Amino acid sequence: MNFEPVPIERLNLFLEKLELDHSTLERLAPWRQIFLDQSEEFGREFCRYFMRIDRTRQIMEQGDYLPGLEKVLGGWFHALFKEEFSSGFLNYLWNSGVRHVRLNLDQRFVNLGYAMARQFCHRIVSQQIPIDHQAQVAEVIDRMLDFCVLVATDSFITTTFHCDRRMIEGIAHQVRNPITIIGGSIRRLQKKTDPGSPAYLAYEMVLKENQRLERMMGDISMYSGLFQEEPVAKVCDLAEFLDIAHRWVLERGLMEGVDWQPDLRAGYDRVYCDPQDLEAMLCYVLENAAEAANQEKPILEAASGPDKDQRMVKLTIRNNGNTPAPIHMDDILSPFHSEKPLGTGLGLPIVFLAARRNLGTLSLDPRPGGGAICRLSLPAPHNH
Image (tube, rainbow, N blue to C red; front, side):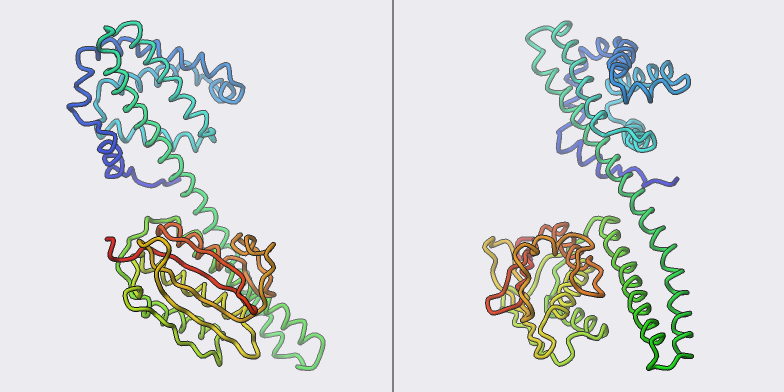
């Protein structure tokens, strides 16, 4: 299984924020050997500690794992005080998170392990470090272990997301091929059938469900894709991206006959956002609003203006369809919840996730007189 490369730049940022530079670590220099001499004892005590927990004992008792684990943990403790977070040690810390995923080890036990290491170190400080230096030494050790927890957690989350994403992409790929074959076969059968026959109508129903599955596979790929990379924010013109979204929705057979005239207020017509995320947000918001609008006389309005938070720009989109029941307003943002016959239930959840990862918000409210109001707040460009 291939995993993400070690993000050395991000790990160095953690070191910088925790102020773990050479000068800070040098505060341990007079006492470093005291900790290095306790490396083997740390490995033994760590194993004794976790042998008392059923889940971790089951993992540690597999094969001849225990003696080797004591040595590995002693080596980790030795490197912690010897290597001053060298590139090799950073790689080791990161890959420990990968190993935790492979072992299916609950991250809470990992954090508990670092808590135990902190207690072990503090005991050494209280027993072997002169009292007038104890606070300074304990502070540096706490920063070091905080860093280790950050790296192990970051690695665990990134690796888990990678595994989940590969699973989702694999399922989508495997399902998409049969869907395409089924759709083509049904169309060929339908062409040979009398349009007025029950069989023709049955084929039509199957085709619509097949199209819904095709859309769902596309939406699932879009949803999982939001976890792949960090957003790269730029100043984006709302008019340009609303035009792209409008054309996209038109191509899907929606918004026919709709008088679409977005009203973008000067000074609130640009946002600071990842362009791909913004395009996805506006496409799905407009699609949802158009589908829910009154089909006899659809009304769809868009306006921008100031948000309560002056650092944000608020884009409001209104339609005139049926007003969602208050009890359903929160459900609308839940994946796979849809009241539309051919809906996938992923459109607004994609918007919600994309807004959140760009430091924005999405909210929905009933519109007086019928319909719904969607408010999308995103960072304003003047703050960047």
